[in-house]
Structure formats: structure tokens, C-alpha cells
Length: 233
Image 1 (cartoon, rainbow, N blue to C red):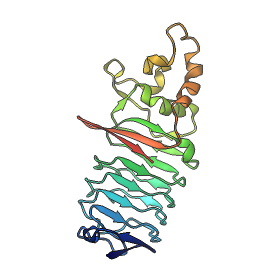
Image 2 (image 1 turned 45 degrees about the horizontal axis):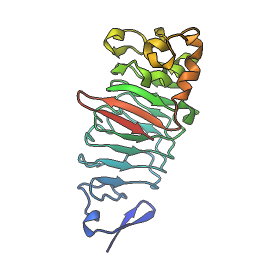
Image 3 (image 1 turned 180 degrees about the vertical axis):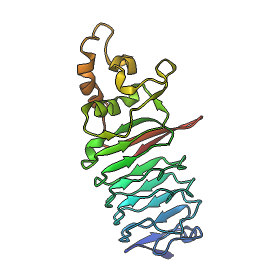
Image 4 (image 1 turned 30 degrees about the vertical axis):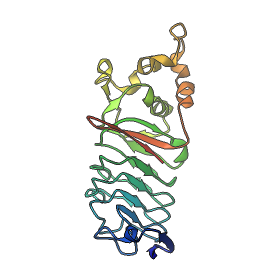
């Protein structure tokens, strides 16, 4: 029976093969299989030497303040990234580019700037309420599908609480392609929200209807040609 040291914690590896590190393994981390555990390590930045085959990276309870451009570029197989309980204030442009398999992203409430530009995001149901310090968001150049799933984001943009780098342009459905999201009505985005005989005051109802669709987690749908990924943190 083997023991792996993971930061200041000791994790019991039941299977002897579970502690065979994916080469290389960052100093001070534990690397069982395709998982890298670097939690509780007082890290101020992302560890060096992360294996390209990595699928899950656990960095919770460290002191990371920024996700810099290129720091995750080689991690094309990454599906889970946990950054809970850090000091992250900004995700720099391009920091998440290339993470086409990412499914779960967990961020701390200290985040002030979120950059998700130049990705393949088609909808965003993000509980901004859980990010009280968030002040600006860059969502440019994504594949926005202006349907019911985007109503939460629509509500937040209308509220004016966040500074946006630019307006969101719809790519789908076809009849809304190239139109600005905020120029659309709720019924145009999601016809099932209101009954056919109750379309008056639809703009006033947009906040309430969108609020009904919110959750206490963060979720992002990443769209490729064949599949959609749900990110929930």
C-alpha cells in the first residue's frame, strides 16, 4: 500500500498503480494517472511541467492571482480545472484557448475580469451572483446561439452591471445570425417564454423570466461541430 504526498495533505492510493506518476509531474504535486493534485500548496502561479496528457488539474486552495495567456496551451486533453479558493482576479486573453475538451471549470469569487474570448462558446448560463467582484467580461468571437439557454446572459447584459468589451453577435439560429443579442426581444430569443396571447410588456418581463432560468453554479456550453460540453462549477 502506497502513500502519495499531495501538498500538505496525504492521500491514500488504494491501487499500487494509482501512484505511478504521469511523467513529468510538477514538484510538490501528486500525479496518479491522468490527474494532477496540486491543492493546498501555497502556489502563486500555475506549476511548471504539467504533462500534456493531463485530464484533471486540482489547484484549489492556493494563492494564484492570474490565469496568464499560454499557461494552459499544451493541455489539450484537460477536462476538469478546479481553481476554487484562490486569489484569481483576472483571466487574461487567450488563457483558455485550445482547451476544447474542458468540461468543468471552478473559479473563486475573487475574480474581477473574465476573458472567454476567441473560444467556441454557444451559450452561457453563468451565475454572476456567485462572482461578486466581477466587473468586466470579454465574450467576443464565440459561436453564440441566441436561444433560450442564453436568457440569463441576456438579463445581465441588460442590467448594465458588467462592462462588456463589445456586443454579442448571434451566429445561430439562422434567422438571427449576425444580429446583436441586445437588439432582440425575449420572444425572438425564446418564443416559449411567453404565451402567444401575452406578448405585451415582453421587454419588462425579460428580467423575471431569465431569472427563473438561473442556478447557483457556473455553466458554459462549449460547442464544436459534433458535441456540446457543459461546464459546471
